[in-house]
Length: 282
View 1 (tube, rainbow, N blue to C red):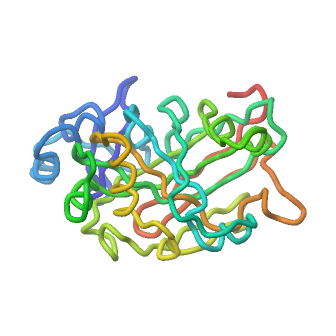
View 2 (cartoon, one colour):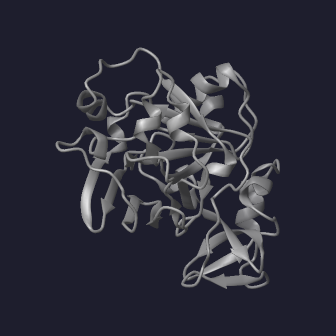
């Protein structure tokens, strides 16, 4: 299934993609849907002929999960990106966090803070959790994965590298598009360890292109690792890291200055199409 959270008349609804229409699933958003014990069966069972529907063409997508209890992000997880940043392959995942206030919908404008001169892009495969887990291993970690979505980990590099801790470069308000769909593992090659092409372009120029098969720590390993530290709840998001091609690693360096169209796409999942708002516009 492909699931999403849709903005409708000042509120939101959880929906399922069915051809050129979106089927209302009877929940206010995907976070609420995923909190139900049998969410997958319930979502699949909704009769498209009897439910409220919305056209895909005019859909206004909210963040795929609008209010996750946590967004855990992984740095330096594609081998080629680790190499371009001049680092050794890590023994353990590098973790940092984002917050619900960071998240944007699939077509929302990205707010470029006036305080940064080094605004950068990062295409990422994101894991969405479908059941509560703590210290999950093996099959339990696999079963905790509801599906995958697309995330653009927009980063203020000058703030990120002010200190050895990255959080202040990653947690800016209204900076991180995520969506449009949560795609369940059964629809993807590789299932809970999908091997998918990821691409990011700026004004039509491809900046990043890779395959999630290059991940050092795969989605299941990340669920195991993160859930060892903290409980993972339905709707929580793990962003799995970005491949090479970020602006900060280019020669000369290249950043988003405002007005650019950024397209972030993952094979079989969908695409984010966002305009970078100029200073003071968002």
